Amino acid sequence: MRLEDRLDRDSKKVTSLAEHRKAKTKKWSRKPKTTADWITWLVVGVFAVVTLGCVSTAYAAHKDRQAVEEQIALTEDEIAGEQKAIDTLSQQASLLKDDEYVAKLARSRYYLSKDGEIIFSVPEDNASKQAEILNKAYLQQNKENNDE
Image (cartoon, rainbow, N blue to C red; front, side, top):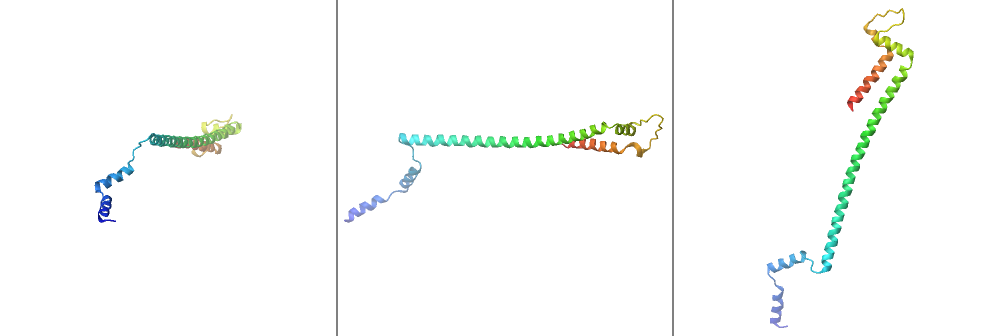
């Protein structure tokens, strides 16, 4: 090989820095030139948009489901509280069906008496045992309603 051919070949390998950068950026910023390239980019873009739409829809559905589950939990708690109130009222109703209890309650709260009976009011006599039970149940029910 001659020296001139060798110098010619070596000089072809040397490029300027600007040409080198241009060649590198050209490699990464390839623009579609053919119809097949355009179709490929279009399919990738449509796929990306559809995927993004599906993900956002799934996320919104997940958030809605969480909100519904929280509402269900709150409603179940409310139902449990109302069931306790119903039980208390049922207990009070069964007690009020008993004539002896009603008579004791009327005597303790309203100072009613039987025929020929004289009532002396002292502070300790104001609440009978059944009246205390009713009062406690009533107060507890009001407390639970206020807490909710």
